[in-house]
Length: 120
Image (cartoon, rainbow, N blue to C red; front, side):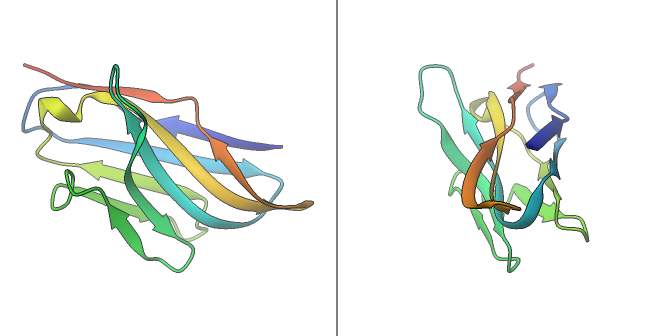
């Protein structure tokens, strides 16, 4: 069993900041990728930012320069720092991990989602 536990999110005014965290736990052998996807109402889910096992990061064009992604030393927790938030960043944010378990893989795991609302 693998669990992804998300925290952070909420309501923030335009121009404000929020920090999301995602902690992976369970029968994990190694993590290939962790990232944050977001889904606005009526839209498809899209990648916001991600980090590979080698430490390479990738960002959607719409968040470059405003969002940063980092992970802890154990590489099982990923943090998304969101600055200069805009109303169009409003969405449910989902953590995703691509990982190897003790029995095989790679497998995709998703968190339950945390809402982010940017509004005055």
